[in-house]
Amino acid sequence: MGINKKQRLKPSALSLVLAGTLFSVGANAQLAGHNVILVHGFMMDDLSNPPTSFNDVQQAGADNWRAYWLNRSEARIDWPSNARIEGQISQTAYQQVRQISQQGLCNDYCIVVTHSTGDLVTRHLLENQARWLQADGLQPLRILAVLDMAGAGGGTELADLAVSIAYNDSWYNWPVKQAVKAFTGIDPKPDNLGVVNDLQTNVARNLAINPMSIPRLRFVGGGSSYGGITKPFIEGKDDGVVPTHSACGATNANGIDSCSGTLSMTGKVSSQNGPAGLWHNHYPVLMSEGANHSDVINNQTGNISVPVVNGTVLNGLQVNFASRTYNKRAWWQFWGSGDQYVEVPGSDQTSMSNLLYTTLNN
Image 1 (cartoon, one colour):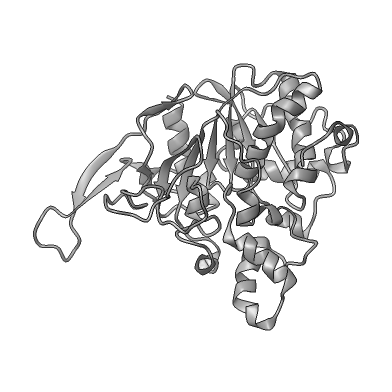
Image 2: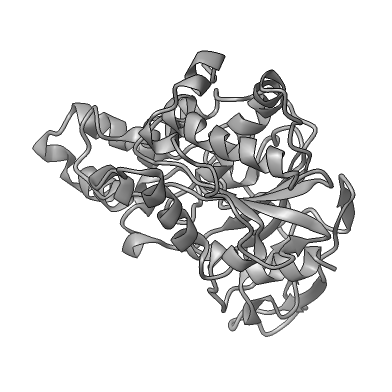
């Protein structure tokens, strides 16, 4: 269920007194000539130490983006991870959406940048924001595109396991419990998982599923998080938290190894276990075998990025990453031209965030 008029008139403590808290965090912080709005991902600390005020939520949101994106944005939508998307999260987020509308930040279209669960939160907001704002006599936000970094819109098997452990904390589940604890930071109980409930694969894939006209550009990693302890419990390839089927925008939750059926995450041109289909208007743009879940929004370097959807225009946004094709022989190959690879040249010298920002900003 969404936000009704009564709920907006009686917001909880987290969403009270937001006036004046939304402000530009970067001077002329734009991407391709459009203001940028940031929507962060799951904050595990909110489960073990729930925020007591919106200031707590806002501070955590700022810290999340500080390494790269904070000073490249004009606004953020911050939300508490100890809540549910169709409840407190939407109420808190909507108060910020109202301010963005009132300030006219998206009159000339905005670009939204999300990380992880921010993908799912944004999907729910975009499906409902026009109706909510018009009911308040405000103009809906005009969104040009959404850039989803390690998007969790398709959920993660770690959330499925967390909910399972919450109801069956038997000793023989110890290995699973350690992976779940690395992901959530807590010993799961039925009443302390917050947004993790929404990240269950079946739940996430049934939330705000109406096709939208706004393109979702996907940026996908395949690295390791938490020392690799979570990887055995995630279907297909993953970034340590989010499975590739979710990050790519695949139409089902079957485990896959790449966003493409003909290109691996390392850039090798070969038959791959790719998605059977992609959600409407979802475009996997870059993949990187070594990029892990958290560092796709930070300054991690040393990872080659591989272009998937490239050389196109999506809703007026130019997607044109440099690309080179080359052949490489394995150390044991003494004849032939070797295997063919595709990459964004020089991408290992910069972060994925900087690569997409500098490219799309041209």
